[in-house]
Image 1 (cartoon, rainbow, N blue to C red):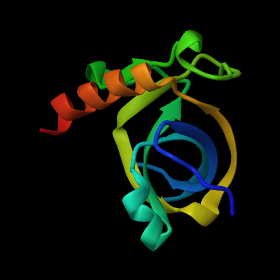
Image 2: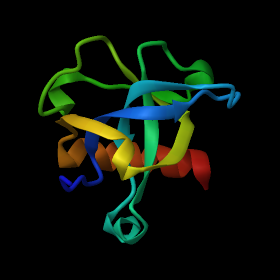
Image 3: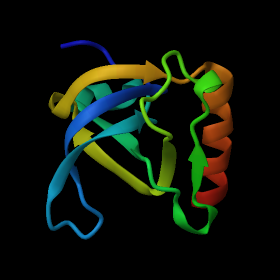
Length: 112
């Protein structure tokens, strides 16, 4: 199984809808570090093409990524969860380290 790291953007199966009535395949940003490798899970932020509500998102600029997203994409900070690594289909991009720091700072303001 390939090794995925925080800052990787992956295409993932079985991401639950917010109301937990179903699942979909979607891109997500991995935000957990290597310590969750022991339980074979990861923490993610959902990526959506819909602009998040109440400023609880962030536009993913092409220059922040190793490979641009196909569609205009946003991080959805109210779409955070955990999934098994076996649900990952493939890596599609990764954030540049300085941009990942910006996202961690924004996330900390929302969560703390």
